[in-house]
Image 1: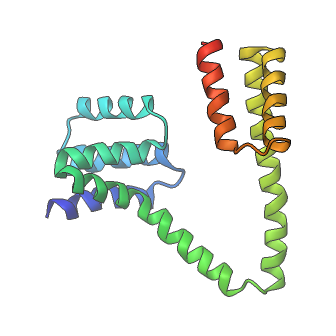
Image 2 (image 1 turned 60 degrees about the horizontal axis):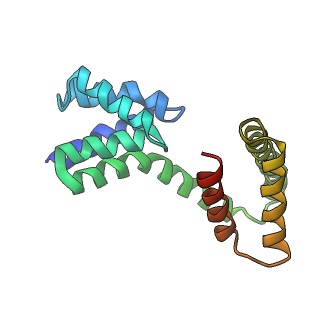
Length: 176
């Protein structure tokens, strides 16, 4: 029965928490503190602080930890699954509808609008990364890393994974 309660405690905030993790935090608190009394308010704020300190989505980190404390490894799995299940179900339904009407002129036009939007978002993200690199490392190191990375990948066909690991290693040794 505990696994069903864990599932409900995280599935309901997943459905109602429109806006992602920060919007669902009060709903999760209501379930785990108010309804099931698994944590006190102080314990919940500590879990929230720990979740904010780690990289990644806050709701899945919190659900994994709380699920683990209540039901072990299986409880953690159930809690994380319940957190992502609403989005997963909606994406599957949405993609099945799009696939069903993939030959429709409206769907084709919609996908034509999505591609440039993604390109712009990726461009903005790349610019932000570049600007942050310049401000923290300077123009010379940023340009050198970019030029060497470009040459390694384009001229010498080195895997991007190796180039990224090498750039991280360079940063760890020479820029720390």
